[in-house]
Amino acid sequence: MPILASLLTEPIGVAHYMVVGAVLFVCGVVCMATKRNALGILMGIELVLNGANVNLVALGSPYLRGESATLMLDGQLMAMFVIVLAAAEAAVALAIALNFYNNFGSIDVDRANQLKG
Amino acid sequence: MNWSSLLFLLCSGFAGVFAIAVVLSNNIVRMAFYLVLSLAATAGLFFLAGADFVGAMQLMIYVGGTLVLLVFGVMLTAQSQFVSMRTSSGELLTALMLGGALLFVLVFTAMNVPMWQPTNQPSVSEDTPVLTATPIGMALEGYRVDQLEQPNPSLRRGMSGYLFPFVIVSVHLLVVLVGAAYLARARRHHTESA
Image 1 (cartoon, chains in turn red, yellow):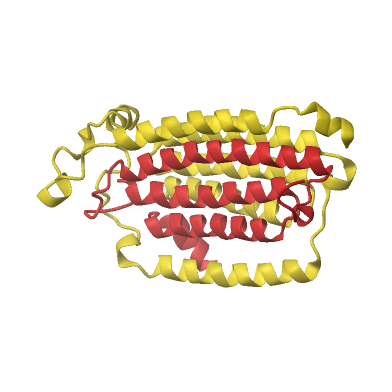
Image 2 (image 1 turned 135 degrees about the horizontal axis):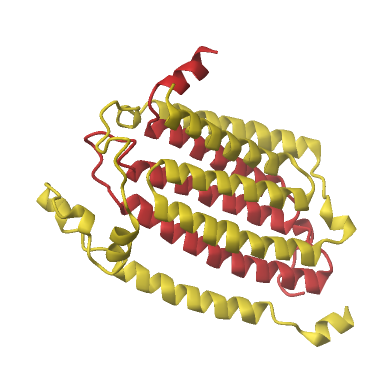
């Protein structure tokens, strides 16, 4: 396992964080595309936003970047805004999902095919 | 042996594996649990990148707030036929293939940007703590104390802080919470007729 050994001895860079962010992002996208439960789709959205947050924090981190680190706190502030907006989005989406469940007696998004129930 | 690399591998492994478990699991209750673990591991990644305040906020708002909200939603709708809803394997296969292609493109791009490669001379050495809570609070009030010695004068104009986005986000949160309470209120006549 030479790759794993070099991961353990070499310093971690932004690219490593980007790979983790990409994995979270792709998991979120696949989750949004395949889940039939509305709450499962919500979880996919959370994963996507989280992958974006990993990238933002990594790009602003002074530990991971050399002389090119001029962002300082911008990445972290953007990540804070994303976290807060994700909380707001989850509240509204959950309210809509519960409303849908109350009206139709189902949480399957494939059955949500009319605007006015 | 590099301890920060080891901790990074541990946290990123947990985050990635539990994110994949969220995708592959069919049970909505287990998905919520895996999501909690994945987000908590991501908070560990934030701590490792020197973002202590954002990591704490991730734990408090995401894991402590948003996920509790999601778990409440799961509990309110967890009738037996909705706990485990299967996707047809053809659709799952297509999504996994497309997701694999997207992952390949993203990883290939991330690995080939020279600015993002690991550096042996980080701008702050590993054993120097970076305290971010006070500068973040100052930046939200409009003062970028971390950018005082920005060498590029054309960049310095944009360093006026984040007061305006902060105000917009706070108003947005208020509107969203009022709207969510309005949407989710109990409507008696609908539930009786159903």
